[in-house]
Image 1 (tube, rainbow, N blue to C red):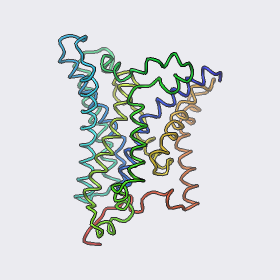
Image 2: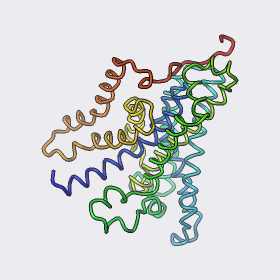
Image 3: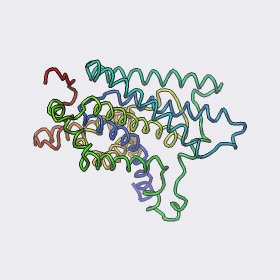
Image 4: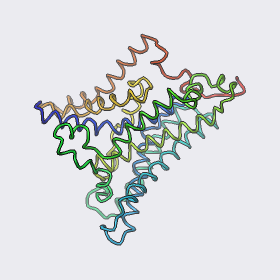
Length: 332
């Protein structure tokens, strides 16, 4: 691989990793409250289609394509993605926290629902466009999400690696650092970690366990939904096609384990996962079956990290003690 190809590979690895970073950051925040939300793939999918619907109807409301307002073109899809994904997080919390349903089953149901929701409304939008291609193109809106720093090209390889991305890519990194700071350095983060480790003790200390779980899960879901929005509006250049999201939601969940439930560790982990996901494109002469095996590398690396962290048995490298367990206050 020559130097130019290496720079391109790093760029693509970052772009591939940003949706994973959003999903894993949101899931880490959720899991720190003790909620194991396996609905993240569906929530990311729902966030993506919610943003697409917002952008689509905004563009359709314009008298001409040139009348698009950059601020509204960004604000409307972003708000739609945040609301759509947060509502699914709210449904998950209502079922698991209030009704005490099984978290694993509920999460898988949310994933199924989110994908079905996205495919239904995505198919409906495709019919409205009367397009010969089964997709929705929102290139006018996408260009605002994909806008990069104007000086990136003048900095050579350095500019291409660090300054050639849209604002959502940098937002993902900022949000990950903010979540890491919140969990490690703030009183609210301490309370949230206490709820995830031992909700009975946290409850006895006066912490509202249900509220902590609701807030962490809904905010985490909203963050994950931004990953879906980034994929469509930035990575896919504003083109929505049903079933086009792939297994990125599941990779985001795997990244949580790889990052050892630390949002800041998920930043380099997401780039690594993104690189492993596309490295087969840079290896000439691979058969299709070999390509699919190479795409499994992120999961293999996650399993290795999980085994190593389990053997070492360091508490700080393990998930919350009450992860996946419903809390019954009367059993305290």
